[in-house]
Image (cartoon, rainbow, N blue to C red):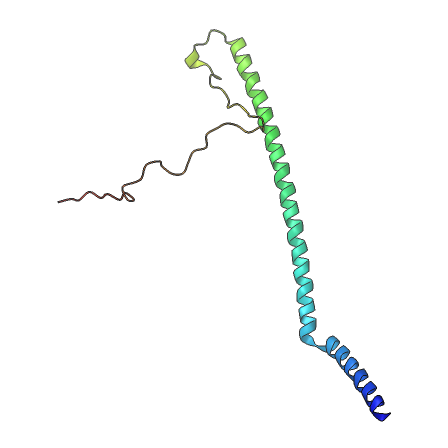
Length: 132
């Protein structure tokens, strides 16, 4: 019978020891604090990304509206110029060139300049000329 009481006391002592170790261990508390900070940082990053997406989608919408309004303004000026100055020579017309057309996605069909040349430079050619 005494061994049963000893066993019960041992089990209760282990449980109390584990509970005390769990709450008094500085490393575990520090780990918990770091986990909380990590989760908070993760939430801040997600909200920042959401804000960026909102910002850039709104900016794109504003730019699209601005482009449409500029196109209307340009067409109005071109029409007015042609009506008010009908006898102006072609080389002297103020609005002689055409604006780039818009495709279905409201994107212009302008060719974007490349930052490289199609031809290799003399520095990268595999055949070198020899000077005698």
